[in-house]
Length: 457
Image 1: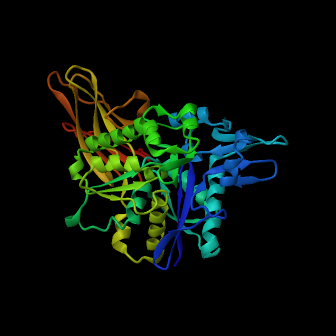
Image 2: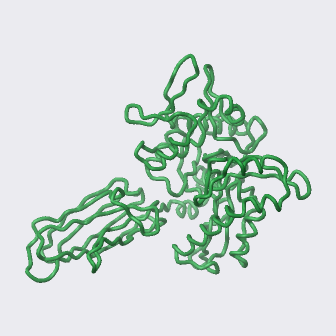
Image 3: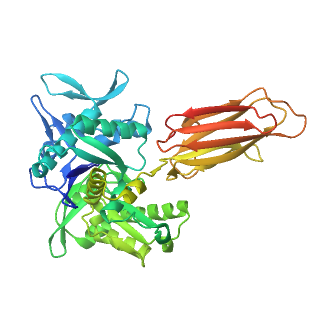
């Protein structure tokens, strides 16, 4: 049975189909295997893809780009605020929700980000139907690893509004692994695998070789940055024409180094050394760059570098394979292994150290396979009659801010002690859907309080 896999990225979208036991990317009506995730509005029509991207200069205020960055987010979200500041298409809050303000001259309308995503998904469905026919609507959609439940829900709703039957949402790294047939190892053959994704929001340069040793930039985003290094107009002008490979590598060397530093930081955070990694999977258009590939090989000299599949096609191919598995139920072992969800952010508990300063303990590091259970002992002076357990979420590096507190549990009416401490046992259980159940129990009296947070991260 035929099925579809769709990857909606920040700058482009790609669709693959699973048919007759294999997955292949489908070219759109322009003959391109990747479609710009751009929607342009005019008085009488909505244009999606390459035509919308090409017309953005003369219609910039009505052209929506990178909708994935705002999908499912509210106006107080820091990433949404950054996006609103940078977007050339005006974004406002209307009736409590973010909207694009589209002014075509004849009328002004307010468009939901979900409606923009729906148009892109409709384009992907149309592309898939060109080879499968209109009866094939079963799809697996990929989502970034750090998407929360609201972002996942918005993405799924947009796909369903486009007429897709969404079988499952799958993390982008999981899809990349599936494309290379990884994920079917038994515990005895366990491997440590690094998935390195360089898409439009991390390093927005796409190049092609036009002659021996001569390259041309085929796309750049001057407002993108990685690790604080920003593409400037000057750099964009340097990259606008044909250039020698050495010159390109020199100009982009700081960006390449920051990519490698990001990998080093990830290894350190996860407790792995480079020698512990068995395979590296490259995905995202920017991972085509030879110099970047060489730097990764230098970091992992004995590792198998998997890049035989075009890097901007790896993720949708993996999604299509997953869709084929789900529709055909051919391999229950693989299907079950893919049901493992992970926590998107660090979950921390607040405490006080010996000096009296606030301290934070990570209970669920980002990437913790779900469901998961943790136990934490909280001690408080016996002279107080109430104890509060405070929970925070963080992007990493064991950092937490007051505004990131998402829950608290208060135990009241405890027996005061002249000497000694209150020993409070907190048990935290995070379910597969990301909801978190917390119980706090006073060891002396057995007094207990419990709460459930529907979306913990």
